Structure formats: structure tokens, C-alpha cells
Image (cartoon, rainbow, N blue to C red; front, side, top):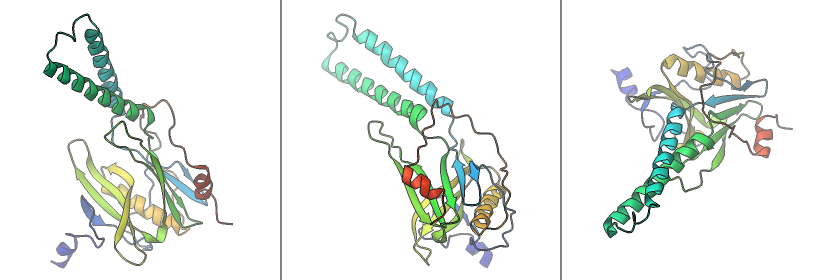
Amino acid sequence: MQMSQERKSSKLKPQAEKWEEDLPEKYDLQQPTAPRLIRVNEINDIWMEIPRHENITWLGTWVISIGSLIFISLNYFFLSLPDFFSEMTSDNKIEVLLLNFSFISLSLFFSRMALFVPRGTPVRLNRKRQKVYVYEHQRSIWPWMRWPTVIKVFDWTDIHGEMLMYSGRYDYGHRLSCAVCKRGTYEVIDRFLLSYTAGDNRMIRGLWNHCCLYMQYKPVPETPLLTRKPLSWTPVNTIRWPEDLDKESKTAPE
């Protein structure tokens, strides 16, 4: 009965949405799942970089973007015909203008998603500094706004692992979330994902154990389970670290 009650809520407050399980404390050397990487960009004696690939069909962003552009072009063609717009009532003109604005916004949103959203935004773990560097691209549903990139830097000692469970039609499986807490407490001040959805929860537990052991200078496997990059459909690499943080995250303190 006590075990059942423990599973109902997290020790971390506030509890994460979709929470399923608190993962073992990071200094526990007897975690039940063997360490394993899902994907990795780089791993060496100083730092490790883990890519985070979203469960998005990027081809769909291109299809919707191109479809919206075709609609706008056809609509502009008809509006440019003699007397086409002038013969409309005021209400019809407003409806047409609003419809065009909506499709322009939709096209711009999906064009930005297709061309400029970084794929596989990384997290770097620097064990010499005991720091974690999280590359976050903050996009908005409003395409006319700036979508900034923010690098968050956390102390490894303040991070706790938790497993989330998603059960949507197109996103079913487990995620590894990292909760950043006030020093010495379970009071959460920030969260970030270390892995998007994986079908097998052992992959999530194994990745957490791998990170924990790596940050303690313990031997860990360096070959990931998945070595092939997901198809991105983007023509350019849009991940660009600020020069100072790029250097700091890949070097030991002097």
C-alpha cells in the first residue's frame, strides 16, 4: 500500500505535467538499468553533447507552407482581376482581407519552422565544470514575433531526473525531464527535456544513468543506440552557440 501511494506523486514540487516516475538520485551507483546513450553528438573526457530531436514530421511543415503560398498566389491573382475586389460588399472585403492575413501568417509560421527552427537542439554536460548547458529555441505560435535562442546554464548538483509519460495519438511514449531545484531542496525553479519521446522506458532510465555516471567520471559506453540522424528537411544548420558559451561548455576551468 505504501509503494502505491509513493507512485501517485513526485517528491519534486510543483509536480511536472505528465509525470510518471521520479528517477534515482544522480549519485546512486546501483541504478537498476544499465547506462546507455540514445543519441550523442560528441563525448570525450571533458564534455558530452546530447541532441534532442522532436517528434515532428518536418515534411509536413514544407507541405503546409507551400500549400499556403499557392493559395495566397491564386487569391492574389483573382484579387488583381479588374473589378473583382471593387464589386464586393464591405463585409466580403473584410472577410477576404482577414482570410489572406490568416494564410500569410500560416505560411510564414510553417516557413520559419521548415527553414529556421534548429533540429536536435543539444544539451552539453561538462563534467570538469559540473555544469549543464541547455540550448533552447523559444518559438511562438505568432510568426511575426522574434523567436530567440537562449542558452541556460545549470549546476549539475541541482538537477533531478523524472520520467514523463505521453499518450497522444502521434506522440506516445516516455520522456526524460530534468528538474532544476533550489540548492538542497526539491523546490523546482526550472525544467528542461533531455530526451523527447522514446517508446521503451528502459531507454529513458538508461540515458539518465549514463549521464549520472559520466558526470562522476565513471566508465560509460560511448556508442549510442541510434547512430542515424532523423530526416530533418532543413537546408541549413541553424544551431549556433554564442562564442563565449561554446568555449566555456567545451573546456575545463583554468
